[in-house]
Image (cartoon, rainbow over all chains, first blue to last red; front, side):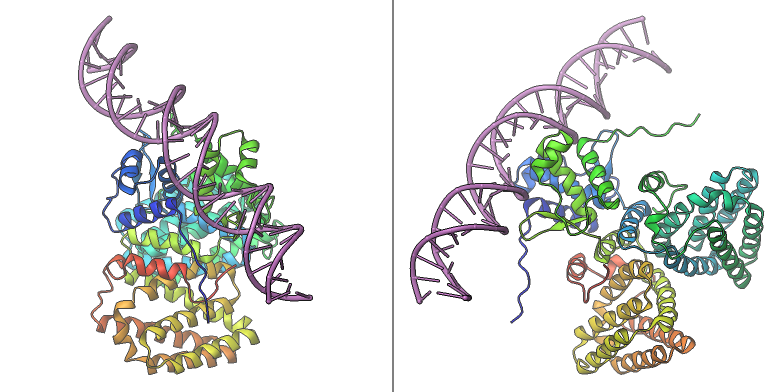
Length: 260
Length: 260
DNA sequence: GTTTGTCACTTTATCTGACAATCCAACATA
DNA sequence: TATGTTGGATTGTCAGATAAAGTGACAAAC
C-alpha cells in the first residue's frame, strides 16, 4: 500500500486558511480591514496568540497590508510580493544570470509584440517621458540603470497582459539589480542604450512588431555584452552578483508602480 | 521636497528579517534546523511570542518547513511556493485565461527550443514514459489532464533552465487546473493530444527545434480551441473557472517534483 | 538479535492575563 | 481654521503556565 503523510494543521494554520479562502472568494473585499483580533478570536474560538500567528501568515502572503492605524487591510498582492518570492527561489536555487537573461528575452519580446497591438496614447507618453529622463540623466550611471529598468517595465505594462506583468516583473527587478556592480561599464554605453530605446519606441509607436522585437533583442544583447566586458561571468549564480540588502531595498522601493 | 513614508518595523518583523538574511547568506544552511524558539529569544532579546510571530513569517515565505520533530528546517523555496503566490495575484488581479495562455505559449516554446539543445537520455526516458502513461489512461479524462500537465512540466525541466522552471511552473499549474471543468470535452480529443505529444517528443529527440515549436504551438492552440468549444470564455477572469480548493489541492500535491 | 514498551527530556502549540504604545475621532482651545 | 487634548479602540509585547508530541536510550519480551 501507499500511505500519504499525515499532516495535522495547527490552529494558526487553520486561521490563515480560512481567512485566505474568504479573501480569495471576495468575502473580505479588497480595501476593507479584516476583523479585529478580538473578533477573530470569537469567530474561530481560539486564543489571541493563535489568531495573531495566523495573521502573520496572511501578512507574509501579501493578502493584507498595514493601515496607517495598524489595522490590516485586504490587498491584492502586487508584483513586489511575487518578486520577493521569486528572488528567494532564484537565490537559493543557484540560478545563473544566463538562465535569467534567456527567459527575460522571451518575455520582453512578447511584451514588444503585444505592446505594438495595444499601445495607448498614455503608454506612449510615459515611454516618451522615460526616454527624455534617460537623456537628462546621461551622466548619472546609477540613475540610468533605474530608468532603464523602468523603461522595460513600462513596455510590459503597455502590453496590457496582466499575467505577463506578474510573471516578468520579478525577472526585471532581479536582472537589473544584479547589474549594480557593472554600472560604470554600462554607463559608457549610455548612448547606445538611448539609441536602442528610441528605436524601440519608434517601432512601438508605428506598430511595427518586427522592428520592435529586433531592437529589443539587440538591446538585451548589448546589455549582456556590457556585463561580460565588465568582467561578469554569466554562468555564475545570481547570488554572487547582488547582495541581499540591495535587493531588499529594490523590492521595498520599486521604480514605479506595478500591478495592481 | 519628497518624503518617503516612515515605516517602523515591529519586533517580529525584525526577527523575520534577520533570519531571512541569515538563510539567504547561507549562514543557516539548507537542511539544518533553525535554532529553537528559546535560543532565538536569547539571541534577539525578545519574548517568545515575538519570536513565534517572526517564525510564522518565515514559514509562509517558504524558507523553512516542518521537520518530523516539529523543528523547522531551512528549505529552498520550491516552485510550489511561487505557485501559491502567483495564483493569489492572478486571482485577485482578474487575469483572464487568454492572458495566461498567451504567456504560457511563449514560455513553452522557449522550453522546446532549449530542450532540443540540452536533451538528456534521462529526460527522454521520462517523456517517453509519460506518453506511454497517456496512452494507458486514454479513457480516464481526469488522469489525462494531469499527465498532460506533467508532460509540459517535463519539457520545461528538460530545458535545463532553472529560471524558466521557476517562472513557468505556476502558469502551468494554474492553466491546467482551470481546465478542470472542460475535462470531458478535452477528453474527446485525447487522440489528437497523444499525437501532438508524440510529434513533439520525436522532434525533441531529433533536436529539431522548428518542428518541436510548431507542434507545441499547434498543441496549445488545440487546447484553447477545446476549451472554447466546451463553452469557456477565454476573456473571463481565471477565478471564474477554478475553485480555490481545487487549486489548493493541486499546489499541495503537485504531479511531480519541481525545483529544487 | 530484533522488536516493542517505557521513561526522561526537549521542543512546540496553545492558553491566560496583563500592560504599554499607537492611532482615530471627537472635542476643546486659541 | 488650525492646532492641542483626551478617551476609546486596537495592536504590540511581555510574563508565565500547561499540554501535546517527538527523540533517544534502555530494558523487557519474543
